[in-house]
Length: 335
Image (tube, rainbow, N blue to C red; front, side):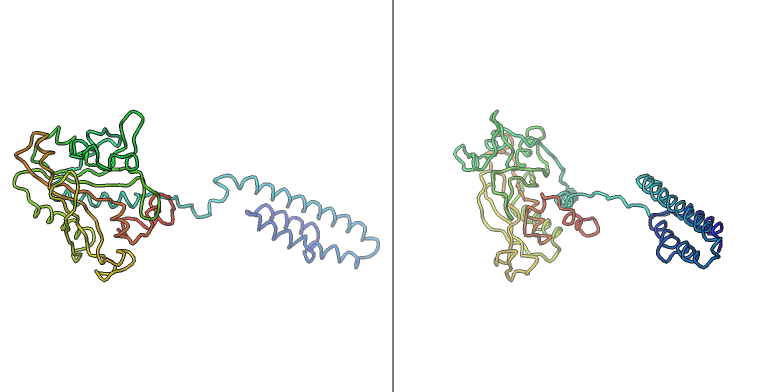
């Protein structure tokens, strides 16, 4: 191949190159140690003596020109690489799509369960007064829950609510019974941030006020809730307890869904897990609001703990660390 034809061939190939890899391949093919132009240069010694100077001059000139073209092409590709239209043949980048947090997903699921049972969803402020957070809920002034080591107090005397029960009092002040409500929301308590404790948590509390409401109504409602969350085969048990705003009070425990009551690390070898605190609304609360002729029940549950049980999560801190690998496990197709 003569030098003129070789030069045109290389120039055309360089113009068509679309990537740095292609340009580098052309450099090796034509200007490398075993390249086409290098072979031509090596063959000049076989020419007659009077033709060698002219051929060598043309070959070296072409080598320099092609080397400069390759250099310019590489710079051109690097310059355009930052532009979004650099190579329209490349596959598109799939954008990351956000989703609901697992605690929000479970909270919505529980709300839907209660909505189907005729409950309404009511929310309230996270910054509360002592009256709504304690006094109106029949909590004595000397109750440990009022102490600084349990409650976040603000400089103006208000506090971060320790439960969503204040929403029930605010609702009863505005709406007369009968009523059925649930109050989901964020709560705060002075606590150590470790695998099973957090100073902030999500809670859902419920209230059903009417006439002739009994503990049987409460147990039936909570049993249905447990079966809706953990499956129809889950077993529930109720044990006596104490809360200042309910009398009598009880706790609902469910059979551990992982060991089926045999005992495992999740349930601490007990075979069952505490899930809900509940009881009949204390008569003092209803009488103070002018509803002495009514009765009813109230209950409260921590969404974080229920989520840990349902999804076999052993560290509550995972809900707050925003690790995408953890959060991406929870989408609508898996819950």
